[in-house]
Image (cartoon, rainbow, N blue to C red; front, side, top):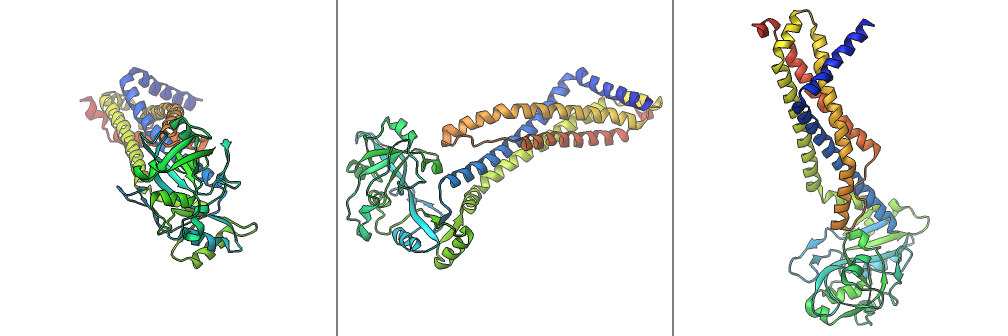
Length: 409
């Protein structure tokens, strides 16, 4: 009982110090809270991006993605992109002739000029893709009838449907709906000569780019952006046949088309994340700096605490108080600061994540990108314990080296 009472008394002394030196307490709590908050936010962003990306790929109804290499930017060129998959319609036909492939569809992403009156133009993302099939859902209207008839076996002299599917963001931006028209083209001159009728509203393809989009048949996208000669596409989406193994099909296609890269949904997502390696590394670096700053701040405050009270500690040691008892006071004080900082950091994380989701939705169009879980919050709280442990051990080590008699002279 004496031991318990003694420990309780030492803990009480440590907690009294928190109230007595309020400025030091506030600074230490803020430092730890910032380290916790930055860790939780980065982990939440990472987990949310992966979960959102996987969800979008699963919703696409596709199993494989075939590409000819990275998509290259071409500033000042029509469309703004150098798509890397050549002879897209030929590749599409060859893939659909395989027994292990159910459907294959080219996807073409380009920047288009758009206007409702043919006078004032803004840019949006144009998607050349099929608009029919179970993977495309509509809130209004329906798919483009006639398919990719303009391709006409490679002659590009078939009839153009001059119909498009828009996403809800485009509908709001231009105040248009089913039955209205848009002028679209890779150049202003082309756009003025190509008026498209809106036949449906769907957010299916805009989920991939997080921007206002218009969807039209691939050959018509190539026609208005001047890429019919090379029949270029950004990538090819593939749905494997019922009962076919996705991994085995990917390997087989890559062997038959060695010039192309074939990825599963998971591999395609990982590839997209790898392209953002510099951004991710920068985020990790900021978190590391925040944690290190928290450790240094708390350690410095605890060392100064021991230094300012060195005479008191010296007197207590000379009176017979053991160094272990003094160490309990210092460690308890530091641990309490870490716990308070952890609670504040975790408490701030929830509203901060709501704010980040609002900003992300406004900038990218993706909702719920930042997600938090109990494991992430627990990990953030563990950071506060680690920070306080380092600071407490440093202060305890400094205390152990003090010589009581020298402090009393």
